[in-house]
Length: 446
Ligand SMILES: [Zn+2]
Image (cartoon, rainbow, N blue to C red; front, side, top):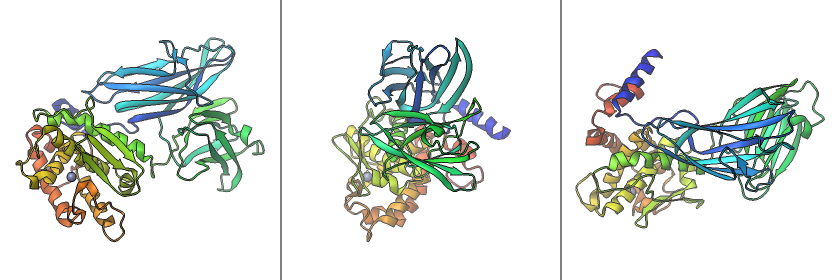
């Protein structure tokens, strides 16, 4: 452990290492609960904290607040009551904003959604204040929508539900005892973009006083998503609980956006000197489509379209998705340059290999696993053909059958070697290999 920490410290100092992020760092940060104000005897104050893990990029953040009924919620975080707060977080920096306890007659509650152009670590803190004395504080990480939320539970468990859809939805809250037997269940309706918070015993009063088990929260309609947060409440004491959304399957719109912005954040260092301006400040137009074909493409209108079906095909691996998205971004860079290729000789036959090479450098720079390239092509190859899953026009290729071939998978190790030989990557791949693949043979390119 010591050795690893030392190694990463040295690599960081070298300044030639890809950008890695802490668990939970995201560009879409959801906070299912906010609380501010209330009578003097029992007030709440909400703080939101954002840490920028990037040492080079400034984060630009938009924070939107919604009340219980789903309308924009004007809340004062020190710069006036408003429902939209915009701010920046310096490279390696952080920012904390605190609600001003503006309402003294009732507790104002709702949800918050922050969007950032690079991944941030987001935390929410809830402080309980009695007669001007802070008595307790609980914290929770920003979370993501899920199709199933699981939490330990007692009878008075605190639950917050938020609806990320524009129309009202119902969510099933089910209490399960320690033997795995369902004791009680109820449907809870929440307005579009709305929020509801309650104690489990309020919704399920028949639960035994000594109930100890778990709750499962699911959308009433399969395919919908729920935002949830729970807080342990027992005999007047409160404590935090682990975050309970599913690890997999995950929210694909959120993952596509995260992968896309991480790649754009890495693009300027790759494309410097190539007459390109593909960056977070000058992005291509990202379209996330619910078209059922497994498909992605880039076009000369500066649009990258990623179908949810494609993300679902590589659904357990952000690195596989990153290679496919990076390949499309490479085509955008080619279009913007006005040349057929950027790194390989200017020949139509080199257009796809050139995009693969640019994609490989992009995924490495953005902190993804470059071996995900073969996984992505392998899954496309598996799904291509008789099943008809994959679009016959995938990536505008006339013949996806050869594009998703064993030959292309085999070529990827050579692409990794070429990426490591690229000038901006000099001194990069050896330390990467030492940290990520410490047990690979010395002869491996990465
Ligand atoms: Zn292509």
